[in-house]
Length: 114
Ligand code: 5GP
Image (tube, rainbow, N blue to C red; front, side, top):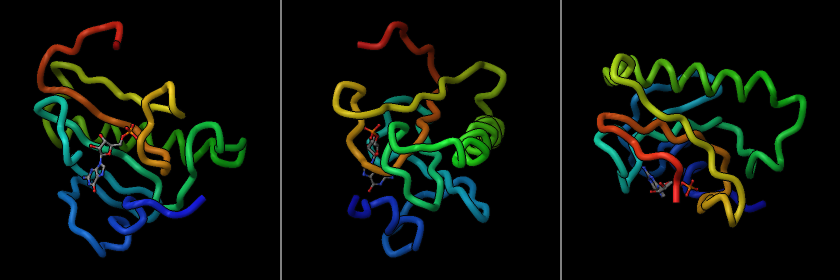
C-alpha cells in the first residue's frame, strides 16, 4: 500500500506534536482531537491495518500498547482512566492506512461506540 501522512510525520517532514518516540514507535497528538487527550501511537514501520499484521508483528503491537500506557502516564490520565482503540477497515472507521492506536482520555467516554 502507498505510504500515508503518518510516514511523513515519522520522517519529520511534516510537523506533529510528538509526545513520545523510540526506535520503533512514535506517539503524537491527533490533529482532530475527540477528547482533552487524544494521542495516536504508531509503529514507525508501516503496517496498513490490523488485517495486515502477522505473527511476526506481535511484539511490536504489544510494544505499542505499553507505549499507550506511557503516554497516559505522561499526560496524567492514568489515574482517571483512558481508552485505547484501534479502528480496522471501512466499517471499523479506519481513515489512515498505517496501523495506530488511539489513546483517549481526560473526560468520561461513552460506551458502546456509535
Ligand atoms: P482512524 O480514523 O484511521 O482510526 O484515525 C486516524 C486519525 O488520524 C484521525 O483521528 C485523524 O484526526 C488523525 N489524523 C489524520 N491526519 C493527521 C495528521 O496529519 N496529523 C495528525 N496529528 N493527525 C492526523
